[in-house]
Image (cartoon, rainbow, N blue to C red; front, side, top):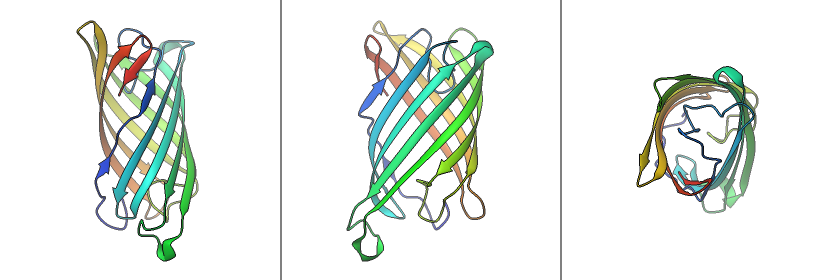
Length: 185
């Protein structure tokens, strides 16, 4: 992130709604042809720009041959007292629209590559706006634990919205089915 060292993000996923099939269908896996998945999350974040509340909604669709498409809408609200000049409120709304290709690595593992267009306002910092791109690679494995399906997924990404607005990220996610068609991620 430009402008200094990124702060810590404390993320608590409130809701994960997913039509669970076996093996896992998140992160490194694309949805089965004709299937879709929706994940919604709410989080609190602290970084170089202060404190913010964030909501993300992701929907993913599957097509034949390991191909998929996804749309993610992100919103962020920084409230007075979060380090903004004059105690102003700052709200942002952006989106990612992308395609994904996954490659099976046995029955319970997958590798995938993704390319997305970035639009709207950036959640990455106050000076990054306009269109851009994100390239991402993911590796994941699924498992059964106590009769419930779960997964672990590792991703790396590079994101750019032009000069001075580049970001690289590593993400790790784990999830387990808590009820039919419901996961905690």
